[in-house]
Every structure is written in C-alpha cells, then in structure tokens.
Length: 259
Image (cartoon, rainbow, N blue to C red; front, side):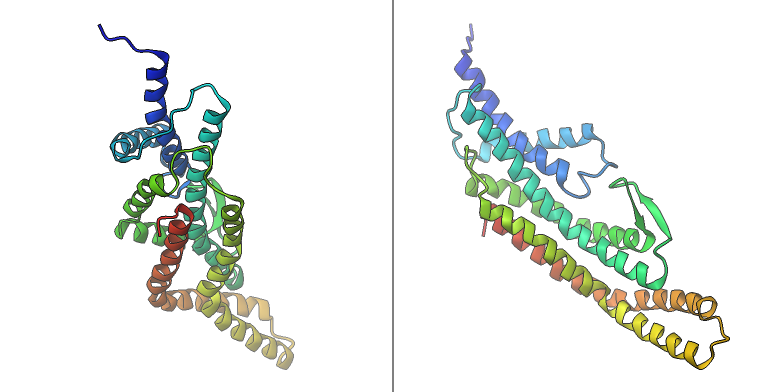
C-alpha cells in the first residue's frame, strides 16, 4: 500500500506549485493572454498546461518546509518574477498606444474615444488601431512562443529560491517609463511635425485674414491631413515595430538573465 508522508506531499506541491505561481503571474500580467478578453479560467488552464510541460525540464528544487518563512519568500519571489516579465511586455505594447494618443490629440481626434475591451479603459481610436496592429504582428511572428521560451530559460538563470530579483532589477523596470515615452514620441514624430507646419500655416492665415473662421476651416483640413499622414507613415510602422519589439525582448532577456 502506497503511503505518503508530509514531506512527500510538500515536495510534490513545491515541485509543481512554485513553477505554477511564476507562470501564472506572467500569464495574468502579459498582454493578449492577460487581457480581460481571455477569461481567468482559460488563463489558469494554460498556466497548468505549461507547468506540466516545464516541470520535467527544471533543475532540482530546494527542499523547504511548506509552512515556513522561506517557503513564503519563494512564493513572493515567483510572483515578482512573473509580474516583472509581464510588465516588460505591457510596456512594449503600451508605447504604441501612447504614440497613438499623441497623434490623436494633435490631429483633433482626442475626443473620438472608445472603450478598450482588452484593458477596460477608454482610449482614442488611433491608439486602438495601433494596438490591434501590434497584437496581430506579435502573434504573426510567434512572439508568444518567444515569451514562453524566455520563461522556461528563466528557471535556470533565476532558479526557484528565496532570492531572485534585486533592487537593480526594479530600478531598470522604472527606467522603462522613459524608454516608453521616447519610443512613443518617435512613432508619432513624423505626423506631429507635419501637423505642426499645418497649424503654423493656419496661424499665418488667421493673421492675414482675421475675418476667416480658422477653426471651422482648419479642423477638417487638419483631420484629413492627419489621416493621410497616418496612412503614409504605415510604411515605417513595421521597421519601428521590429526595432522596438527587439529592444523589449532584449530587456526581457536581460531581466531574466538569459543573455
């Protein structure tokens, strides 16, 4: 008759439970899978499925008592590692949303907002358009598989232990805010510069002909030119996406210590 002791049970729970926590935290925080469109039940099933595949590939896990302070610290570290990796991916996606916000505010579409079903917030239609493009490109190049590959490699570079991310990692995560704003400005810069010239021209027109209603004439022209410039700037969207997604994955590898 098979007899299981408390040590055997806790070892089995730790063997599958700790990797499940890191994988589940990533799936709850990352784009696409972590959005509101994907139900929590589906995310849990995906996390369990990936855990069952990953566990045989993991290095030996530490022998720690289940109800101890060290076990609690291990759980906290796994949650932080998963959330940090998901946060990096969220920043990469949100820089395109922010670039769309810059363009929409400049061309007069700041009032044209819609509810984002993925994140549950209100964004401009331009940002939603860029977010859809980014999501489709991410899936088309198998970005989700690259994320899972980095996740599996992270168990070797950041093994399951009471120590994991350091203060330097959190400072680097905070620096991603500046990186996001600079890259979003680069996306919107061609359209912003062109519309600035258009607005300067309308300023000159208002000085030359004060009786003309510049707002009534300038708003539709600015809107049409903004849409035209967006269409023309799509040529550079793919190179920008490849550059920014490459930088995002480079930081993800740096965070996980896989490169």
